[in-house]
Amino acid sequence: MPSSDSDAPHSPAPLPIPSKKPPRPRMRGARRILPLLSLRHWRKRLLLMGAALVAATLCILFAKGADSALALHQALIQAHAWAALFIAPAGFAAMSWLSLRFFPGTEGSGIPQSIAASLSELPDARQRLLSVRIAISKIFLTLGGLLAGASIGREGPSVQIGASVMHALTKFRRFGHIGSSRDLIAAGAGAGIAAAFNTPLGGIMFAIEEMCRYRTFRTNGATLVSVILAGLASLAILGNYNYFGRTAANLALGWPTGAWPALVAGVLGGFLGGGFARLLIASAQGLPSNVRQIARARPVVFAALCGFGTALLGLLSGGSIYGTGYAETRAALEGDAQIPLYFMFFKMAAIWLAFAARIPGGIFAPSLAVGAGMGAIIVAFMPEIPAGDQAAILVLGMGGFLAAMTQSPITSFVIVMEMTANHEMLLPLMATAVIAHGISKSVCRMPLYHALAAPTLYRAQHGTS
Image 1 (cartoon, rainbow, N blue to C red):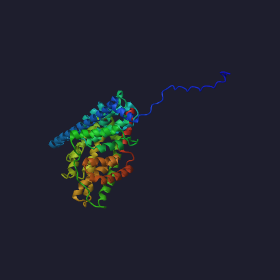
Image 2 (cartoon, one colour):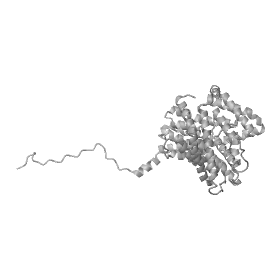
Image 3 (cartoon, rainbow, N blue to C red):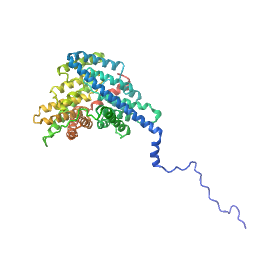
Image 4 (cartoon, rainbow, N blue to C red):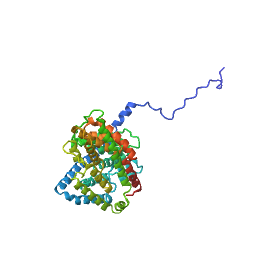
């Protein structure tokens, strides 16, 4: 008898049909290769490389212009020494008036501005500190200051130039995300240092130790590509040169006698460099009451007075305190001349006058000359040092003073080592920089450039001068 439908076995329920197709297995190799074939990917990379080359080229042309400005000023002073009493005040006043009236954001070193821009979250504030217009203006205003005899350098402006050019990449959003603003600013700053001194390792260390002091540095392609291209551009245009030439000086003294120069340079550099940084920070925060009134009410007149003071120092020193101090330092390192004992004090005073006047220009390179002057004082008070080791003491003085003033010991000894092409001095330089850095922290609690960046950031975010 046939069974009813109710007795028939139930058929299994159909499986639910998925609404979406199952994900395909990952093709890791293809994922790695496909971006390399993407036109958008290469547009971003080429744009990054192009900006790095532009920044490096501007810094290198800036370096050539600075050499010409220094040579022209030296020729004028050699022919008419007393003309400095007119050239320096007029030049200081002109650079101050132009920067305040037409090019705000160009005053001072350029490193605090770059640090402040990297710390700011406001695009408008970053634009007030970093732009192509500021970069171009900074070049000509700094050259004007060097032509007037100001004791300024081009490394700080080179940092701001590189950071401005790389930061401009944030406007090219149609090509996709090229990099964060902070990473691009750090990359440009490192490229500026590398191009200014032909020190690629120093540029990388500057980006890590100075620009990323209070945040974790991520090894990103932007920084490495920018610094490498800056070094290659410098090599192609200027050749394989060293800023202070090739110094074969070495400490021939054995242990423990050979440790004394490093210890003395570290201790003395720590106190002097830290004290000088503290003086610059205090001067930026507020000058004495009478001087502050003149500086605020009549900044151009105050700049002219600072220029007149620089001219007087130049006449008393025979013209050695003008400019970066590069010629005097290199001649002493090569054994062609000796640095007088008063040079360090006169040079520090000239740097302070340019800093107080707030004219565009850096304090990094002139501080190396101060360190060399400090080394000359150490040599004078340590007669047991052989004549062949005296240049090595100057190198230690440069590294110690710079490490104390900036509180960036690794950047300092790497840059000095690259500038002098002397790898045999690496260990003494490291010891000197570490000692100087430790002492400087007890003298000046906050690093110089970051202390100057704080009020700069405040003014940029509030739109005040």
